[in-house]
Length: 320
Image (cartoon, rainbow, N blue to C red; front, side, top):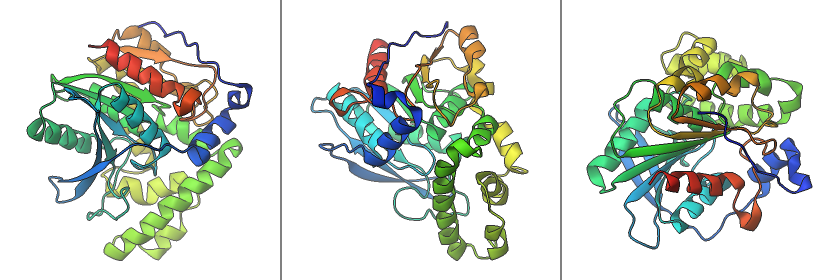
C-alpha cells in the first residue's frame, strides 16, 4: 500500500521526540483498568503470565498486546492500549514475556525480538481455551518486530487472526542498535543495560555454570549483552547473527493480513533502515504511517489516550 498520510500534530512540548519518549515512559499514569492474571505453560516447561482485561459488553474479539524491551503488561503504553480497546468493545490479553512478569522464568533462555514460537503458543492457547471469532495483534518496539516477523515468516496464521498494529518498530535491529549506541541515546542505553544485567545476575543464580562473572564483566554495551547472552541462549552465532535473522523488515513481503506500522520520523531509536517504505508500497496488506512527531512509543494525545491508541482502535475496527 502507499504510505498512509498522518495528521498527528501534538502540542508544542511534545513535538520534541525525546520529551515525548520520556514523558510516556516515566511520567504517564493510566488508572481504572482491571487486569486478571492467567499463567500458561510452554512446551519447553517454562511459563508465561498473561494479564487479561475485559470489555463491559460481551466481546467476540480479543487483542493480544506485546510489550517492548524490558517492559511488562503494567507499563502505561500497555495499560492505555488495553483501556482504549476494552472501551471500544475488545477484550485484551496483555502478554508478559519470559522473565518480565515480576519473577524469573525457569529456563536458561528468555525473550527476544524474534521469539515467535512463544507468540504461537499464546495464540494456540487462546484458540484452544477461549471462544473468540476475531483475534488482533498490537505490539510495541521489540513486540512490534516480533509480531511482524510472525506474520511474514511463513507461519500458518489462524483464520481468526484478522489484523495487526505495530508501533515504533525497530524492524532492522542492527540499525536500531546503531542508533541506541550513539550519544543522543546514551541515557536510554544505560538504563536498558542496567536492567538487563540485573536480570542476567538473577538468572546466573539458576544457571551458574552457563553464566560466569567474567562474561558479565564483558558487557559494556547493549551489543555486548546480545553477544554474551541473547545469542548464546537462543541459538544464534553472535549478536549480528541474531539481528540478521530476527529483523522483521525482511519478512514484510509475506504478510497476508492487514497490518499497520506507525514509526515516528523523530524516533531517536530508529535509523533510515527502520522505515520500510518500499515493502509497504509492494504489499497491499502493509500500511506504513510516518508521523512527523511521536518519539519512541510516545505519541501524546488528549484525555490521556495517545494518538496511536486511538489510531489502533480505529484501524482494527475498520477491518470488521
